[in-house]
Length: 221
Image 1: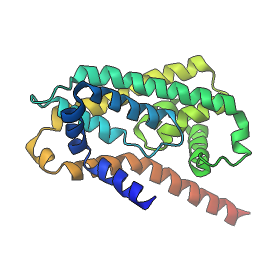
Image 2: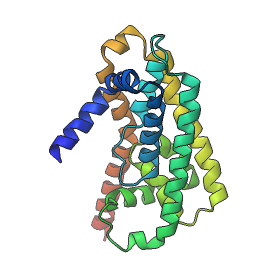
Image 3: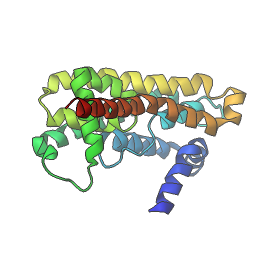
């Protein structure tokens, strides 16, 4: 398990290197690998650890290189489709399980992530699906919780489309326009760590705020 985590961390921190290796090895099949990673990261509650923001940024960066075959427009349209398909898969999995997910312990579903996302929904409502797109872990659980809850599919669909477009376009184009600045290329691992850190700030803030609110409530009682 530790070796797997080390390999995953190495993949995330050097994602640009891995992408270039895939392109050399698999050529246009790299698009399929990108699609599958984004689909699993957004569509399966058991894989919230897969890279999302950093993968999009790295893919955009490599698409800007003249020596590589990746096309930025193909990346954007394909990965919007991957995120949308993942969202909908997650939504209907949540709907099929229903509210029982809060009453039972599922081995592959992290209860703390589920509860954290549920609390986020209570505070922000349907726009959680848009906000969560830019928040690791919560974006994986948001469509699942929407399916478990009472959100009607047409409403979910509208938020999902907007959120997916904003997320994929923002990070892909950021990589395309800024990823090939020499300083960023020379310090790509630090940039990826920065993206991850900034993405986690709202999650950390929400977790700390929830913990403090609970302590205040307990003291008041």
